[in-house]
Structures are given as structure tokens and as C-alpha cells.
Length: 452
Ligand code: GUN
Ligand code: ZN
Image (cartoon, rainbow, N blue to C red; front, side, top):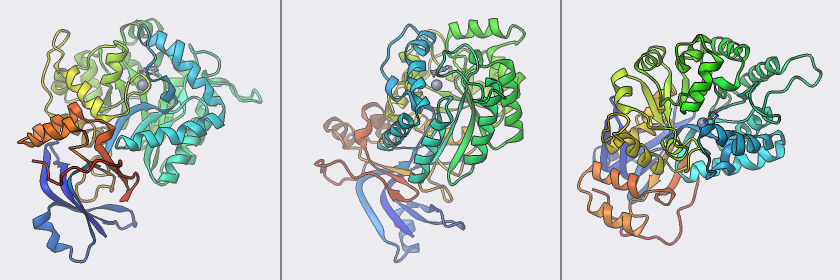
């Protein structure tokens, strides 16, 4: 067993923030020997119950759950910051050519560790990420995540039409299987190879309705039924041109979202990125099926896609969590994403605007995202039994943060200052399964005063 002493942030079942200004987090093995939270709470109340357990003291620091990124594309690492006239030209001009490079396994093996380093540097301890249509892209990322002991979910992208050579699905080399059949065969092989190995999970990954034939969506739905604890990830209702295209391709569907429902692709553990241009019937359907939205505000602002409607989502009881959507998104940093989510929530010209509370923004990127994945009590929180993935944050990481957080006289103020002013400089350590991954940044030695 080991313990850490610092300020401590957790969430209760209702998603309310719990805070100990002087907290203790005790880590020890569960019955399978995996490091989990054995106790969490106020230092004064807990410490005497764990005599002899070594305590690492991080004065002035904040321990918080590792962030969960509910939607990201690892092959789009080099696409960040590519401007375009909206989603469809962006896919055509930047995204598909970059993803085509993953036909070369060596390229995937070079990108995968950089991508995971970048997540960890930013305090993200679990991601649900797209790979590409090349199975080697999946192998490269799972292999690297496994070496690091990371909890990670990814899948081979299914796209058998309306996309260029190089990313579109390919027939089997011997010609025995069509591209559609081969894409589904490879998906099932990858599920059997990786799903449930250590902390890895597979996601059936149709890119979006326009780039999958009905036969491919049908096959994906059949796999989703056969492997109910495998995840599903796709995109829905992001952009108005995309929605017009879906209406032309699937004229008999009531809406974009109901295309997926018609193929059995809305269920628990199904995560749909964006979900901006839904109507109330769509939201009720998603809620009833247990599917969840990956809200991707930096991407939606960058590509000019629109604004996620939190008021309507809350009214429908829709599950959601936060996502970077790199490379449409502009940052790996959960702080940037939470700030963008606040801005998107405030937007009141196209939908009702509201002020999301900082604790709720934080929850959306941790325990809320974990709930969307069906992983409540496993990741995204620091309650007893949760896996020991967490971050150690320095609220004084920059001069302005030090000045602003010193004046914070409530938890909400402290969290808001971090959300607005924070980035990777705040993340002093990322801890995976109880093991500190990255060394502290050099040279900043602020006075050791616990936050308010
Ligand atoms: N829709 C289909 N593919 C993509 C993608 O790669 N990024 C985003 N943001 N939307 C998509
Ligand atoms: Zn995406």
C-alpha cells in the first residue's frame, strides 16, 4: 500500500464535487492485485487507520481523477490546426490524406507513442480513440498502450464508400472477400485479439453514416449484438452539409441518428461524437437506448459546426462527456476543452445559453465521461475501488495562476481559475495504476500553501 497527501477532488454519485483541502488517497491492490483506491478523504480522519503506510506529501498540489477523453483520433495528430471551409472539405483535404499514411505500419508505430505521451502529459489517462481503416494502426496503438499499462479503447475504422483510395476499405488480397466483408472480418479478428486484454477495450468504429454502405452498418450492428460489452463509436449530427448528405443517402430514415438505430448501433457503450443538430426525438431515442454524446467543443468551434445544446440534453436526460476530437479539435488539454465547453454552453443565439458550473465541467471530463462509457466506479473518479489513475495538479504553475488561485475562496473559484488559465503546465504528474509517469517540470518552486 502507498498513500498520497494533498488537496483531493472526487465526485459523488450525483456528480457533485467532493473536496478535501488536506486529503489522503490510499492506493493498494484489489483482489486481482491491481492498484485501486483503498481509501480517500480528509487526512486528519484517515491517516491513523493506515499506520506504517508510506505517504508521499505533495503540499500545495491538487490530486484529481485522471481525465477521460471521450472522442479523439490518434491518426489525426498531424492534422491539428488545418483550417477548412467546414467538416467535409476538411476531411477531404487534410484528414483522409493523413490517415492514408497509416497503411505503413512503421508510421503507426511512430505516431502511437507520441500520441500516448501527449495524452499523459495533459493528464488524460483513458481515451476512446479512432484508429484508421488499417488493422496495423490498431495493433500499434494497443501494443503501445499495453506496454504502458494504460486503459484505452480504440478500433479499426469502417468506411467502405465515399472516401478515397488509401483510406477506403479494401477487398481481401486473395479476392475472396469484398471490401465490406473484409472490414467486418478484420473487426472481429481485432475484437478477439485485443478486447479485454489487460486494460484494453475494442470499439466497433463506423466512421459516419455517409462513408458506410447499408451492408457495412448492418454487419457492424450484428457484431455489436454479438459482443455486447464491446464499445461502438461514430459521429452524428455534426455539420449541416453532412446532415443533408445523410438525408440523400438514407431517405427513409426519420433522422441522421435513426440511421444508426435502424442498424442496431444505438445501445449502452455506444458513443456518438458531436450530436449538435439533434431534435428532441433524437435525444429521447439516444437516452432510451443508453447511448451517449461525446461533446467536442474545440472541434465544433474550429470547424464552425455549431453548439452542443446542454439545456436540451439535460431535459432529455441524455448522457454526455467531454472530448478533444483532435485533430478537428485544437488541443489535447482537458483544460482547453472544459473552457471551450463553458463558452459553447454560454452561447445563447442559436439555443438557450447557460453557465455550466466548474465542478460540472470537470465531471464531464472525468466521472461523467466514465459513466458514458459504462465505466462508473472503474475510472474517472477516486472513490474506493476506482483504478488508481490520477493527476497531481499545481494550481500555481504560472505566475497568473498563482496570483489568481491565491485569491480563490471557494472550490468553484479554484476550479474555474484552473479551467480558464490552465493547460499542460498545471499537470505535474500523471499517475497510471499507482505509478507516477512523468517527472515534475523543472524550476518552479512555489511556496507550499494548500489551495483554498
Ligand atoms: N466525421 C467523419 N469523420 C470525421 C472526423 O474525422 N472528424 C470529425 N470531426 N468528424 C468526422
Ligand atoms: Zn471525430
